[in-house]
Length: 501
Image 1: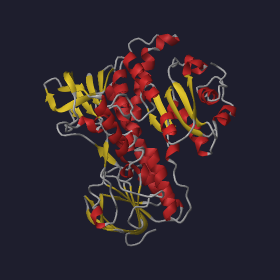
Image 2: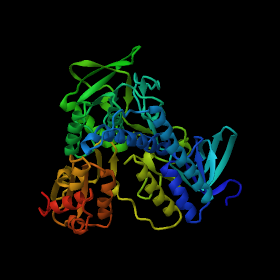
Image 3: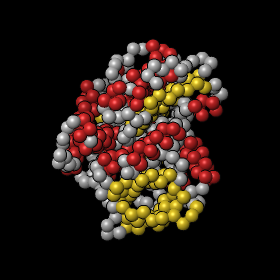
Image 4: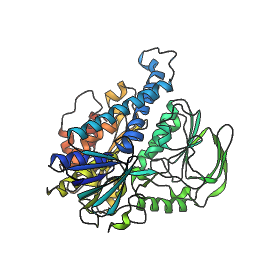
């Protein structure tokens, strides 16, 4: 145990990038202090992100199943959504996991400090809480403060008519109509959920397709399925934040088309600034538009245009830590900053703004500072998952990206409609795409849209980790009938050896 508030490691932030490396560091014999500004542990993912969102989406999936139960021989008349009860279920799940994280901290003898953590000097952290200030000293410091919702002038969050994802996952009711600005993971998940709840949904995306960070065929398939469900999709469209008008019934906002040239410019900027979870739509802010456009009306606007790093309270000026123009802390492959003994992981360093990425980055950092020899995390084995309906999952390179890196590519595309279990479950749409190196047969990436692909993608990630080939995935015996068969068939299809098509 630490004495006089001196620790081997002080971590600022208790999300996946904080509490997971805290546990690993403790396992390695380090004394650990965990600083969290909120009254609960777990960070954005547990409290306002991944967990409550997926609880809501699970209910949306069940509601859709009930509404189509006659297809499976079940008459379920009178099924309706009780949102108040749903909110209780959502909060119950979150509360149970909050207690779980707190229990893990006690079990691993990690000392928790509640308050805002900031640097006094490179190895000294001031914690300002309700009970006053105290100072911690760490042989090592890990920054894992995550990110916060980003908005634009004119679209300030009022928590009533202009809302963020944080508001959605704590709300006790839902709107009858909603305009979703942005179609990354956050925007598409909530658009899918609201549609299943019976709300009128319009998605406004400045770039030319949904989920712009995914394979283009994934985007095309998702838009097709959304439109079949009644979701209005407006891609290549800019919302004029200055035109926002709040009415007695909700909001009005003007939207207009964006030129292809401008879309290309904004897509390049978005690619340079961040990836996936932290997607940005800079064209929402001041991009030139074409045409007169139209005015959209709804009960609420959900601002889902991305997130920004949460570093403003850290007082980084007293350190040698380097921050780029996008607000991202610069680190090496072991997550060391330019300040000796200070590491950073998760959203604050950019890359994939995903909770599971942050956790693995934190483990690498903890092992490195403990004198271990960890293997740097390969960005191409981080799964990217979106829990809309249909689900989307991927890892590694698309064909275009692989060719840009100089690979000679071979690729397959295998449909779920050829899989018996998909037909049994009434989910025949979607596909799995495999991208491989034609010269070495090594797996370069997989891209999927369809039922349970957020679970199925794990098989491909493991194959990539152990330098597997599509042929080896195909050689693995997949149970029949199961959705997992699509992974084996898609792998075999790379060389034209798929059986069921």
